[in-house]
Image (cartoon, rainbow, N blue to C red; front, side, top):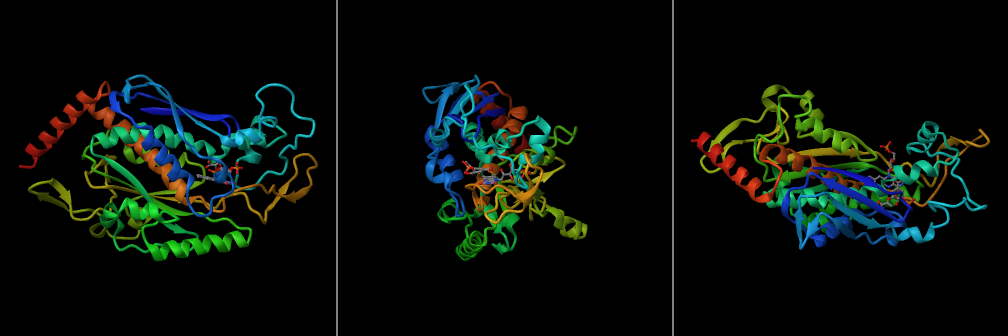
Amino acid sequence: MHYITAGESHGPCLTAIVDGVPAGLKLSDTQINADLARRQAGYGRGGRQRIERDTVEVTSGVRFGRTLGTPVSLVVRNRDWQNWTDRMAPFGDAPADLLREVTPRPGHADLVGALKIDTDDCRNILERASARETAARVAAAGVAREFLADLGVEVFSYVVSIGEARFEEEDPFMTAPDYKPLAIEMSDVRCPDEEATEAMKAAIDRAKEAGESLGGTFRVVATGLLPGVGGYATADDRLTSRLGGALFSIPAVKGVEFGLGFEVARRPGSQVHDPIVLDEQAGFVRSSNNAGGLEGGMTTGMPLIVTAAMKPIPTLMAPLGTVNLDTLEAEKASKERSDVCAVPACAVVAESEVAFVLAEAYLQKFGRDNMADIKAAVKAYRQRLKTMAR
Ligand SMILES: Cc1cc2nc3c(=O)[nH]c(=O)nc-3n(C[C@H](O)[C@H](O)[C@H](O)COP(=O)(O)O)c2cc1C
Ligand SMILES: C=C(O[C@@H]1CC(C(=O)O)=C[C@@H](OP(=O)(O)O)[C@H]1O)C(=O)O
């Protein structure tokens, strides 16, 4: 199962096409719209989110609420397009008073993109480099999420830190799977801890006041996974690399850790690896989950726990220095409407990326044609695992 998206930030709409979708999967636009709303929320978002009310239109691949086994296409309209029809017109001449973007923002794709494609207007870059595109990813991932949910796999996320403000956890690799999704979504920064939520909001307020921006860290958790999904045999099989690549595809994600992550390099082996225990009901389980649910590039059957780091938003109200592309003089970078912090939203996008990778890995293992056959294959696998554990 793969997706491709198209669409500019201030164009008419974003489009996503998902291929490799099995037939007979129940799909609900209500669920996709709920995820789109989660991606739009979060303390620290800018004025754009007061304009947009993201909802999905499914334009192919689904009939009477079930997938047909054909590509699923989805559209999310940009309400802001109404304010950009002249500046983003696909045809005709540019308006005489068009203001080109010539003061590239450090940290955004503006300068390098302009050098790469040979343009004197960074808008030709930023329209697509903008993380507005991630709305299409979240819509598309609705398909992957419903597929996984049908097989008992749930994916959620929560924010761990924003700037210096941090939610301190004892052993998140064992406890995070029990966090209540409602508590996460009730928090303005999608953090299940009230005190940490307040500290994060205060950090965002201070950053805004100072013309600054903030990044942070978040975790994505997937529960209900079977062991042995993914593979150890080739580089392409390994879920570690596939999940890492998918998460690094999100604009502004600069670090990914599985389970204990970089901490494994500091500890001796006995304090890293997860002892194997035979449970009468569950079969082979682990008494800890420092690996974050992956060994040898495969799921262990313990919850998958991935932590990612997002850098601060590049657009600053107190801008850094840049060079004007027209005059070649030193200047301040362009200041435009922007988020101050988008870590809570980024975490929702990361859920989508994780869901796609897991869905594709399940399809590789259990077949691709239709849900009934896939469920039968999953059932047979569960049965075999049971016989191996007794
Ligand atoms: C959900 C989300 C919202 C973002 N909002 C903004 C924003 O309002 N202003 C901005 O300059 N960058 C924003 N970014 C970050 C830029 O899109 C990103 O830094 C840029 O595309 C450059 O990519 P890179 O950080 O991977 O180098 C956002 C990123 C995400 C994931
Ligand atoms: C539009 C979204 O995020 C945008 C991501 C973004 C960027 O540079 O990445 C810049 C801002 O866009 P604008 O310039 O229109 O205010 C954000 O609002 C969205 O997430 O829906």
